[in-house]
Length: 279
Image 1 (cartoon, rainbow, N blue to C red):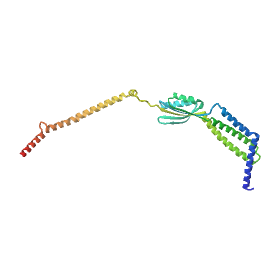
Image 2: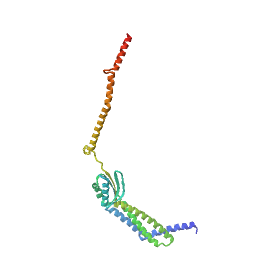
Image 3: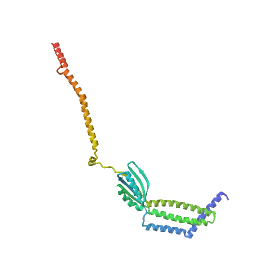
Image 4: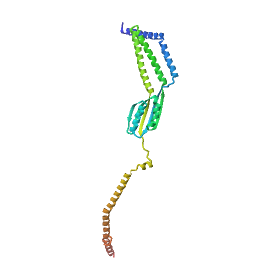
């Protein structure tokens, strides 16, 4: 038999084996059982009382000291049996991402007023009830199909049928693992709420009364004394250097225009000479 003829024969036999498996499952009522599982899950979705919610909170708190605020946050986390998944420290504020059990979410959010002054607070809730139960139902159906494939794997009549069942079984197992991962992640988000917390140091509000209370009288007295010393230095400078200058100016005026009046006499003689020349 040639390679092409063998491959065509394998494809035909695989399809026949697959049809036989599904035919046997339909005859044995396995598909009916799977359909009943889906219908039952649908009824659960309609009658469910407890909704599946993913809740998140965001809080900004103002504290007097970052160290005291950080210690209070750690005590708060321990009190509500949560854990810190992320933290970052800035120069004047700390930021946290905290996971808290959902049943304690509301109490934990209300307790921030005991840590400091709540400046901002927000809460969001995403309803994932339909997604949760739909994923759970499809997972149960895939597990049922996996079990049936395992049973038929033991009853395979030939190698072709065995390989076809194993291929389908591997596909189902891969889908189950993917669904279980998605369901685990979704369940974790439902069971543990996420709260983002930002704590910062409160800044004092300055007012006239506050400023008066904070006056440093020692510094004021020092500034006054320093001013008087500088003023006295200026006076001494004027006395030491100013009087001699004034004396020299007075002497110059006395010699030139005063009682001696050298310049005055010189100008007078020049004036008389000029008058004689004109005559």
